[in-house]
Image 1 (cartoon, rainbow, N blue to C red):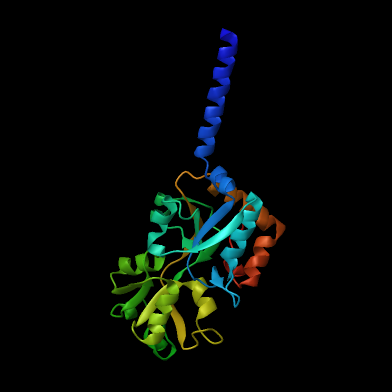
Image 2 (image 1 turned 90 degrees about the vertical axis):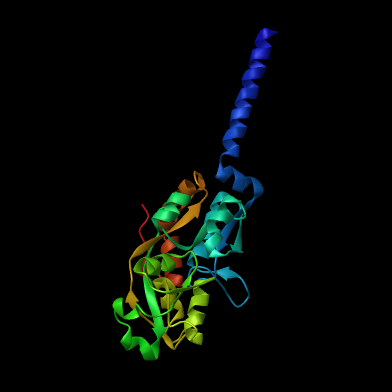
Length: 259
């Protein structure tokens, strides 16, 4: 009888440890609910809507592929970028995947993937004023629109220049186009897709580069989804799927090899 009781106790303890391990696993949590909720903003060419209202873009396509590899559905949730860490920790979203710069603050607040694309923060001004703003010093007196909580805001604040925080990088461009801000600072990959001849903002252009940086994906602190995504990146790069997606959205020159 004692032997049976000991066996039952061992089984119970083992099951308890398994449940605890699953409770601590973000991967198990996502697979259990059957969805990967991805926090994004409207940011072409990474995450944006097509004519049918479907989210597309380099990041959106990769997120779908990653969700498929986990055996779950992907859901996209448009968030206030300044609240991304709160949304993540509250489990409103499962990851932040939206051309997110791997700053020291981001890496301290999240579990992050390996870097997958290069980027920079650059200055956007009206075409007819571009000649006046070809150096960092020349933009010092301008009012600069930036996305709240973004790497662009961080860089401009470090320079000590005046900013107008807005909800998204798309809103920052609208500020300059409307003349309510003198300039904007946004990601170079977004600028290439949205500014200049043949884009939605033909009367805007980019001038000064303020830094160089890398993109990564953010998960809850300690999340095992970060390792799962790194493994997926290696597979997607080796198969050519990652490069094909980059070519679709014109960012192949920014892609970082995954090994």
